[in-house]
Image (tube, rainbow, N blue to C red; front, side):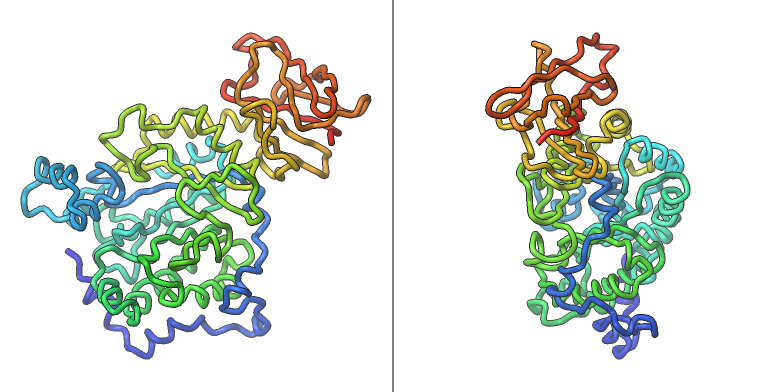
Length: 467
């Protein structure tokens, strides 16, 4: 099935070595602002759209969606670590000589309706989407020139999944289009050879990873390039700084693209664009650098799992809390779903996405294009988080529990008599409030029946002219 050794190794050595250097600059770029050093690259301002967006959707889809058991790391757990439950799963359900590569023809995407995906993503209220163009298994969701016979054009769907989604997102939604790309591949023989040399050899990045990344950016122009999977190799093995200098100076997305911090061992939470620091990272306090909380609705897997129980999924209340906490502390939330092997978004994922969109229709004003306030959460009342829009003199207090008393005490804002106004988003009318000494205000919430509530899972007060 796989012919990695033969695939693309026919390139002449001088041509391969050129990939260690950034592509030649055109006449207009003689004074390119970014050098291939972390000092220079880290100084690049993040394009403004990313901080304004606040909320994105991650999509993990690949051959791992076929066994859809345990985790998207199925191949590694089964073949490398030989975890008993994965070994047993294969023994119970597949012939003895069945290989992981044999899952690829079963990855049919038979019911993949990209317009339906676009509709669901738009309804979620997200402002960007990131698709796994290639996970650690190495299977690409486009017809990669450098992944012969192990891509979605040659095997399985026989479709350019990346292109179809890119076109639908750009034509039918207001989301920014992004792509995830795993630098390494678990079982690629060239990577394993390099690894055995303690990464003194660079056969894999020269002949596979680097040309593939250039191809991906030029062909699909992602505005988010979400790197992952350094395989324990340092950034100089991956030639990350030269690639990023090209991305920021020369690529077709140089003015709008954002990248993360996973460009080699030791880079995470230190170098790159925005920081991810770890999967499901949510520090609960303000950070000095823009960051992203990438997490998944399924608590235990990024890929789709047939063996998931209902309790394995976060509730909408829990997801709204994740979003609110993250944004209040200056981060973006990247919330993951895993489609099935045939290309459907399961009902529970669709429900969560549409529920989030319903919540954001009412409360998006307190999320999108906001800034962290001087206090991220209330020091007196639990589950109250703050965002702000300084130019509009607005502070938003997002509270996740409706008080039984009908009165909400906010310990952080200081009201100004005759100037401060308080409104409940989705309700609109001014609410009564009184000052508390030395700080804080007590807000009288409207008496609403359940059907009159503007939303069901968290509410936001717009506070004008508070200090």
